[in-house]
Image 1 (cartoon, rainbow, N blue to C red):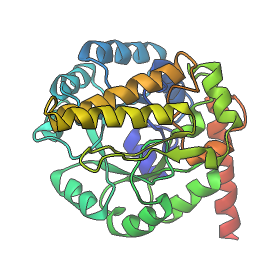
Image 2: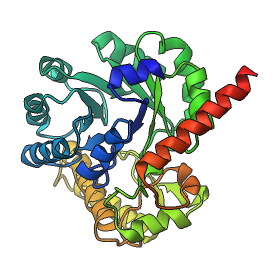
Image 3: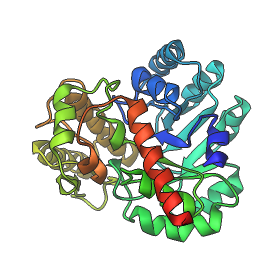
Length: 328
């Protein structure tokens, strides 16, 4: 973990997953202040909103933190420039292959680039293109997910790439014993999202937090793709009426495609904007029945609201104890 902590500039190599509406200045600053590494979820923010969010985070912490940018964002270049002006040290690119010139623009601003790698072939390509670190995230995670479990990805990818760049493992991690296991396999650190949603410092609505505390692992289910032409990345969230609303939204967008009213890129953006709005309804407004309650399968290990510092301390104590037992 020392390698990951040195790379991030944090005390422990635990990144907070970027969760739209949840990973804002209060949670991000608290995460970094507690010794972990907070990451702002830019999501659908405009450059102006991101500028204000970074400034706000800086007012709460002098520790390093990162910014997660979505590669399909139409204003990606401007968002990268905002990060550069603020001297953000780490930019995480999510949502697909980095567009041409984006890696160079981030590095020109002095930041390190972290990318998600859902396959070994893509991981190797990203390393060749000059990324500084990778996140490998399994299907147990909340929000947008791929089709392969964390344990399989870690076994397949860590032996091949962990010596080349720092690799952070994500998806379904809720206790320190799992962190120890992935470190043992060569990971430089981990990324957790679901575990931090019910932190005292999280601005998530009390009803949103209560939904997490009540839920079990099997309540966090993946969305279904209705139309094979529509490039919908599955999303894992707690089962509710909002899932049915998303099915209806897919049918609406597919119909627009059929009639030639929207192009494929616009269709994808409509889906992303739907998620942003549905997530806001749940996180901010507390509509946990019709909004999207994005959660990973580790939600069953979230049992109470507690300070981030306590969560990190518990995770590190569990990990240390596990490693001590292995050492004999």
